[in-house]
Image 1: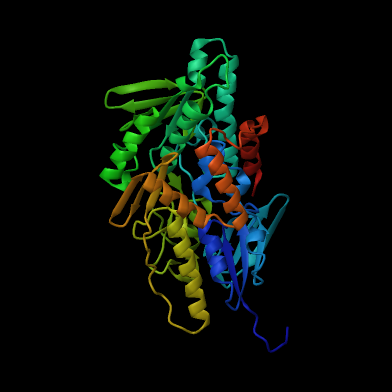
Image 2 (image 1 turned 90 degrees about the vertical axis):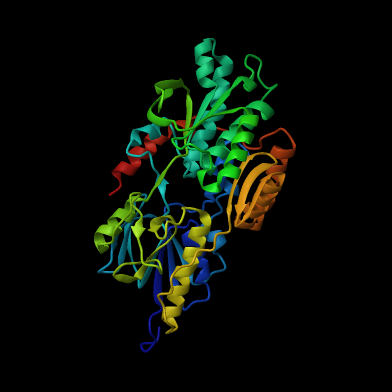
Length: 441
């Protein structure tokens, strides 16, 4: 570099989810050098994790390599690692990766570290009721779901068979509804005729939520329609039902009528999200406030108060009660990138982030979904077609779209599931991962 040439502006992006990835791509033609730090080498399309867990899609179809996605973006580089500490004074991010620790300095910082599963203070539930936030979660659940049918086939105790064929999904938001619907389709449509000693159609799928409605953010009409479709699939929906305990062989719930136990070998947690530990650390370092979920209370332009060079976007930010959905992350990531470009161009900044709500979608079963788009509400086949188009648009990479369509064809038109392979390692690796994470600095 010429001694008179000014060094390029350094932008560090933490997280390669929707917020971080779209912020990075929005800086493609800006006069900056972007460093994208992520705990995995892939971008994860979280809304389709339940399809990995139920054998419809492979993990590769919803998790393209970041380097492949950004290979044509010359001003961006990707580093593997988990950001553990942000020093706003030194403008430095400390990162750990397997066997190595390093630091990256920044001029502007976009924090898009996403959200983690919340067990509402009962983190011990995770061992028995995995969430739906990572590929590891989805693969573990795939092993548990398909493994339950296999174990039921060789079991001779009727009580044990009932326990194995009882699946409990906690949380009646989009993820919980979609998960319950797909397990019901597995049991009632895809697996019958493949076992000799059990009838998969005898499986119980129970959807539990502390709220009085399913899909509570979709409005009364679509909530009622979703409930009707779930009942049609044979899903038992228990609302106004609070989970108070979870163990290896079952779950305890509490209602207005008292406390009772549901015997179940397979529990799936789809209720509640919390900000990652990095959010708390950044709040302490900057003096910013957080909401009850640990998300940073940011300025209207998504900057952290007192630090115009730090942006918190997506699930990291608490702003105008925006929901933790992909579109909020995408749009806020692009907004942060736009603010950086304006500042470097000498233009006024500080414009508030304005979220354009493109609607909410949830699929219940094949050819049946609910969609809320502005004043319009769709259900059934029309809702499902809209769901299909939207998810295809946001699957990153042409190859992923093509293979996803092929697997959807197999699952929705035929009676097969393309991805039923599960291993003992997937099911039992959670403890090893926890021990590894506890050793990180």
